[in-house]
Image 1 (cartoon, rainbow over the protein chains, first blue to last red):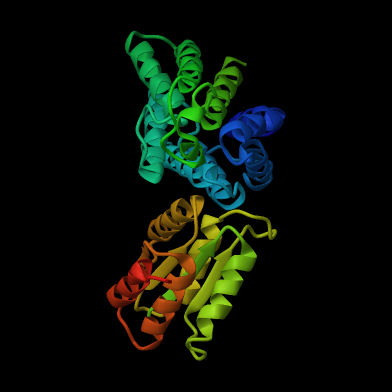
Image 2 (cartoon, each protein chain N blue to C red):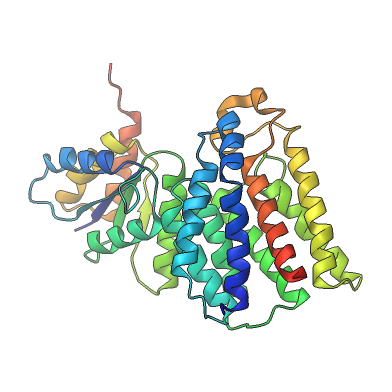
Length: 206
Length: 131
């Protein structure tokens, strides 16, 4: 039986792959029609390259990140690749995930995406979903919530973030060429980031 | 000798720019392309770029010429991968058009330029008028 970190990556991969056409369709409207195809290709490779037996969460996330860097192909490759690698650094050597570990990993992933993409909140990117999600998560665990209920609230914030991306103009990436015509469309990256958080929540809820 | 890496989403573009630039300096060996994904499809691959940087480096640094979109982010990620591995390579990304910049960079590098002068030569290609 595969280890828990591999099972969690499988859950994320299943969701990304199941939503391949949906993500690509979102990207067709405001981008270059490849987000779902690229992410699905990346996660097929992740599930081949990461050791299913590995217990070290950090090492598995680092391997997943390096695989995404090499196989996704578009901008989401270096962005998600860096996010997984930075989260992996924070979780190096860990075989169990506490609520605090999850907070640190989320924050490291966001810092990695910001470093790589030089983006901030409000530019119609994945950050518009995961920054509010991370803030909600941190607030919930500060109130004493457990990891699953804090993540459930975080996923709600991420969904609201995806809705928010429909109302704003893209200023980063391919969608920025559309200017005001990008309004009305939800951001594909914010959507895949939300699917990722929901898959982690579903996995931990069991 | 400063090395030069050509990064493009397309394997054909990267190879073609390399061929074109090498015409300017046929004995220059530090010119390496990193185009597309390993299966030949369109995209950029940070690991492939990192390997190309190591291949191009002879100890005097590497200047990267890149095309659009994720080629810059993947090149930055490649430099960080090498740093994380403890590789001591001075690799910099030129803010320059890939075709003209590569030709100017190769001429400067083959003439014994430094990392700074090769970078400058590549970036000056941005200002060149065609008409």
